[in-house]
Image 1 (cartoon, helix red, strand yellow):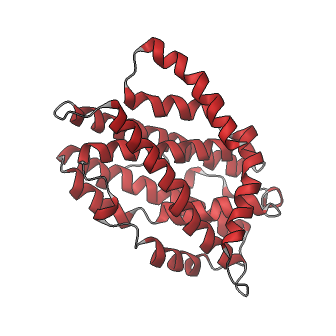
Image 2: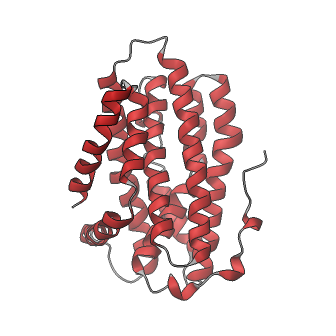
Image 3: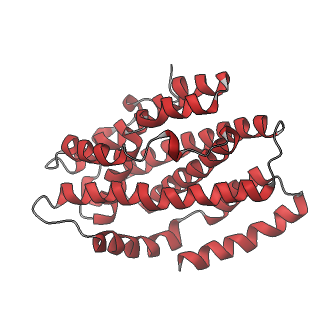
Length: 267
């Protein structure tokens, strides 16, 4: 399978490490993301078995998983070049031991069709996160890497939405069911996944200290002002609304209202 880009397309020699290394926010964001992306193979087979659609199964196994793993490899390489003193492999192994407990068939939506909608929510979270990272980062290499991954995640969103739309016609799935599914999966991604990834990135950086939940709370407090200026609210809202298939006028009215609500929630 040929990915859209490879690690050889990144000019690693151009890294301006001094623009990233001193920023704890970027350390946690890059390292935590590298852990989650590198764990894609944990749940690919479970997800493929659940959706049953052979076309979706082939895409998951031969396109989506290799691209997600490549994201993890690229972010790992960046982290190891900027913070060479850290033992990434040890941190990832500890992360994987805890994260794997979440990657079970029981964690999926009972409806294969709604699980495709739930995956849209995950891709909304990742594509908007990498957009924000691209806007915030000062190192041109990190900005380039974030932009490449962001493009992949938007494309993945389009695929999951296609599979969702292809399957919903045969089932009586209402907009409220879709909205509940989207919001529930967004909440899970922002909660458990982010917490576990941050936790093991923190432990890697503080091998002597004992991790406390307050460290994650402090990180979120630091994250909020960054997100106020860098997060693509309009992009997130428009992606969230597409699976609902609202009529065009209602959709156009909803975007600015939900955008303001999302910005208020971030504040």
